[in-house]
Image 1 (cartoon, protein in one colour):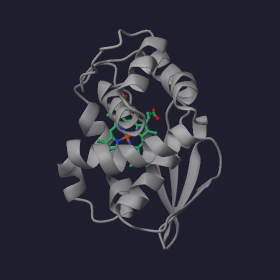
Image 2: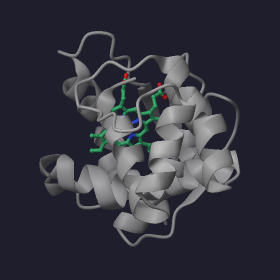
Image 3: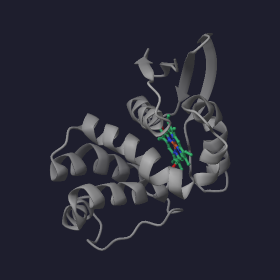
Length: 174
Ligand code: HEM
């Protein structure tokens, strides 16, 4: 998984739990305590999953769902909206961002070796209800939902997100 995701995790843990906890996470995930992630690093997926599902929950005393929700809020509101600000300037609502997401992921990662962002298919099922098919062999639809909620917070919108299956979710923008 791309280094930028780990850079975001580093900032999240450091800001919310302190540098020492982050150093502990690094060591438990198999890195030196002063390891620094670069945005374009290509990080072993197994390490990413270990960090999110085992190391951070145990070091920071969070459930996996809490890690996903905290990450979803932080990724959008404290990280991507700054590091990737131009993408946000073109999107005035959560709906705009979600509808542009397939393009954003594709364009951001097309020149990065081994990047495999999720691909999305969209279908309107009602005026304000969008069905999103999430296509990724990583199976991280719960992370997708947490990030979508983070986007709702960013745009100060009440979203209702319903998981229909491991590949399909529906978002009510009303
Ligand atoms: C401008 C905003 C965003 C940027 C710049 C961005 C960028 C990225 C990047 C670089 C990755 C790693 C891809 C890889 O290593 O192959 C990623 C993964 C991911 N992104 Fe985004 N993203 C953005 C917004 C969102 C939003 C709003 C959602 C959900 C609503 C989302 C859902 C995901 C998920 C679930 C993954 C994990 C990879 C997978 O499922 O296969 N992203 N994103």
